[in-house]
Length: 177
Ligand code: 2AM
Image (cartoon, rainbow, N blue to C red; front, side, top):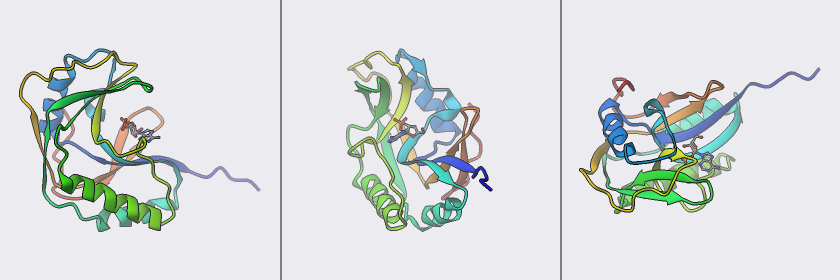
């Protein structure tokens, strides 16, 4: 008998707390396109796509094993991915520590047999809009300081929401804005 396997669409991300989320929303204001709703803003670290339910415990082990030192991200620029027409915000200077965390995560995933994607070379970004017009070349206003304390395993559910399955680091109070 063929049974329909439960699948989960998963990715690892940095998941902002309410304060950072609010600040990122401010950066979204000059952007034109199909805006990402505030509660979905995040920074993807590794995209896994559809995974069977059996993969979850392994992915949770990887989440907890990946060392995340305290990191301070300064979100201070805009960017644009032409082909997917994604407008994003990111960092002019990417901390080496962030690249190290992402490298460790990818190595752990690979060792466990997962093929995780990052849109080619890892370019840390927070997508602000899809089907977007070019982002403003100039970044005006205050940079957003994002103190990262952990990593999240996030599920993209059928109704389009992104739900963190588990997080490491300090508990995030809420995601409301
Ligand atoms: P993004 O990181 O550019 O916003 C959930 O779908 C998240 O995973 C989104 O943030 C999305 O794009 C990212 N994502 C989707 N497909 C991807 C892929 N093939 N490679 C890397 N990231 C992907």
